[in-house]
Image (cartoon, rainbow, N blue to C red; front, side):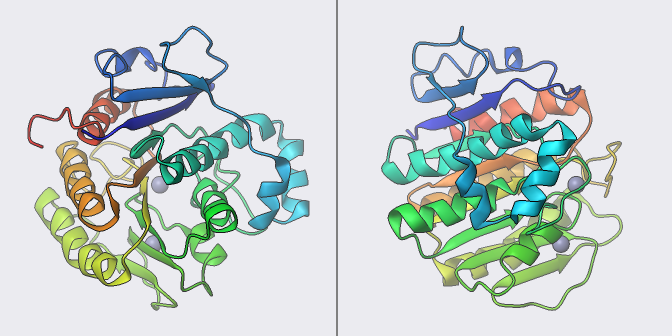
Length: 287
Ligand SMILES: [Zn+2]
Ligand SMILES: [Zn+2]
């Protein structure tokens, strides 16, 4: 059974108001480990989520941008957001855990080298990738992005970098470039069509690329009734989670990091996050 890390920090967010309570029944499993910040009364297995050194930001972002984030008053939260993804990556590479779910408070993928917006500050997956390279010599890292919006920051950061496979599913059109692939999805799409697209567009590329770790920028904002509604139902997410866990098991010893991206509905968060976590931890009825 895989060891699953959950990276959590308290944040002022409506969608996550039910957390960590909504993880009851998951946190007490002996293959689940909670790494948290600002929340000392958790399970004995937990280790504090440590903040990353400021210097690590500069592998990805400009000093000017970091200064601008600091002036927003959201710097500390943004740092913890990124720290969850970075810490998950390092612990997975060291073999302490096999896969991870990261509660980001300030979604990652729009953050570029020197730009941020839409409530998103630092690009946690990008910072994590640079640390995996620096500390362990990682060579091939994959990011799958199923948030409803284009990950323009991630695309920009890695546009000339063939060592990062980035496959983004969104409504836009872009020319493939150095292992950056944009898959245009229709205006309205069914669960079957969406899962099929991910299978056809991501799996063969991932197999050919042979990633050492897979990051999944998972947004649920494309679900019916959420702010990026593309027509998929809540059920599509657990199907994607099962698919990706299988891909990670096949290609990279199960090294999968789920990075929470967009999605505003609190009821969906409370329902879907425990489902995705159950898949990661091997507690899902169908896996
Ligand atoms: Zn989004
Ligand atoms: Zn895109």
